Image (cartoon, rainbow, N blue to C red):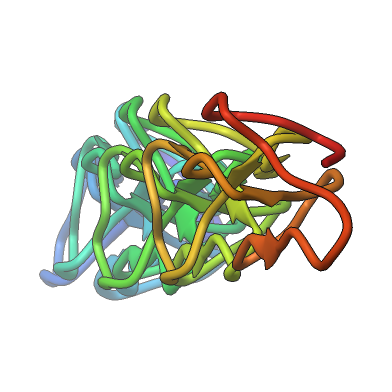
Length: 207
């Protein structure tokens, strides 16, 4: 205005950096200012501002990040990573966790029957036949002698049936006892029939 006895201070969200100014200039998107500013302050990494004439910047949302100064938008974290609020970068999921989706604020634990043994994982891997796992595994556990598992992605192993045996670790099948021997459930070897008993059939639980 003309005919003034004082000059006005630039209000928050604007700045004045020249003499004889007739108006305050709006701070552009990606910046902010408080009252009486001669320049605008860029949003710091981890924060952004999509609008002009603002008095503060917004923190990056959980599941997103802002890596540069003066940002006008945030970016979603990639699959295999996560972030909390106000971050300048995303954190890789570490074993035994993974993320199969973008823009996540936490990583998921590997469910039972699977495992995760690398960082930045986007999926849990199935335990192969002959092995098993519980929740949050970084590796699968081989079935012990006397037990087997014919299927992948399992949470336990099966005991060898009576009349059969499993002699090795990580077995995917059981083997019938030969004639002349027997076994009870969950055995790693068959027991020979002792006098005066015999077995003329395979896969027997008694002599």
